[in-house]
Length: 113
Image (tube, rainbow, N blue to C red):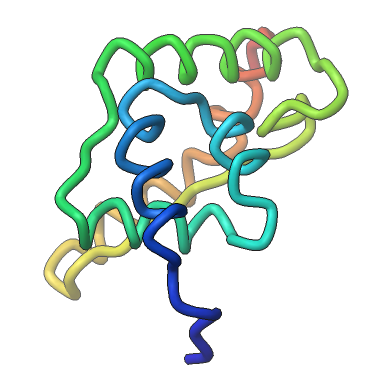
């Protein structure tokens, strides 16, 4: 895996100051040469956590925007994302989740199957 350039002391200071309360778009704008994953990884390495209220507000806004089908939202109305990392013993649960995908999509779109 390729790693980007080292973080400067100024970048680290800015990250420490804004990471807890900044939204994802604000963080990406503050560090244009860094990916979202790189920002999160550095914050984790520095022991910085995001404020729970900021995270909840961000998640709510993303969900509402996706529900309305706004352009630029994290999830559009025709997309379903199921992320799953599960041990082999949970493969039955994963299979059930994948079988439920049409119902999840219909629920997301506000329709019944």
